[in-house]
Length: 131
Length: 361
Image (cartoon, each protein chain N blue to C red):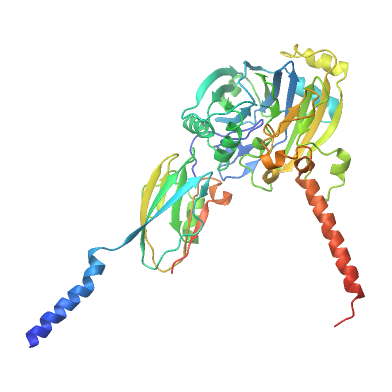
């Protein structure tokens, strides 16, 4: 009897854990850029959610897609990095191209934006409310 | 991240485009921090026997490196030559007390190719000039690939022009060459563009390229035409402009409209490349542009035929606005603001009078 209970417990435990570890859901969000404007102004995400962003730039100029809090945005606005390697949540999208980045959110609201000279103040930014 | 990319500052003349080195933070330039410093520009658009003559000047601001600009044209130019030495100055002298410099123009039909085609290349002093044909994206690609730094509003503005005329002139100023030629800060190089067209217009919207919406855009535009022209938008008179509330920019103001004097025409004709100008019978118009960059979403269409029907399309106006060519748009945003303020004052006055007659509760 004890052995049966132990086996049953292990089976139930395994069943409970299986969905989470086997196939974590990654949602894909597609964002367009045209005339130096993102196609989305707000992107709603859940706490802990992992999102794959596919960003397509239709302009003849480069753009960026930077995810972060206000401090991150300020750092990029003042920064001097000419081109962003594909880091999670920090990409450069060359003119006419499509680039992806995957980012896992925590519990805090974040911002996305482009920090090429003049782009952020031109309006290239949006909100990512979490929860 | 901020790109401190190419050693390019850009600018001037009519269009301030590209950018680069902080040292070039001068008029008409987009600085590396994204801000733009604008200068007043001066342009002559003369139209005679189906030919538009565009004369503008590119001013050397000092410093090192290169800078440049992109200017939409109304058609394919047959010639881009060094302008005369005193044409713009003489026009200023004729109409206003102090001197200035600068300028440019344009019309045509549109198309959007994948790649811009180079249809003319020339050098004038320290300027490398390339005339391109292509859609907004193609011209933007060409400019980017050739080191021009385009501000964020450039894609939309390039399309705005390419839909009407797929012809653009890029101008690159080589400062080291300028230094070799002994050019100093403030020296200008006049450029004369000869454009056969049936539909003359002057690009104005491009003057606000890269500027914040509240930034002032100022320019002096001279027109020399066979007959007194009709323009769209129709400008305000100086009297109406002077009655606008303080801080409201009038847009276009027609400062002078008169038959060009023989002495003026004689002086202009004696300048290099200006012998095409008749010695009499030309009409001189002097328009002053003073607008918020955010309101400057139009160009200046010109009807010099006497028909009094400037093209709304050439002015870059929407079909809706074009349906009332002599109306709404021609009053300019400033006048509408003034009218709105007067209406508001009237409403407030009425409410105050009513309130004054009400018993206290």
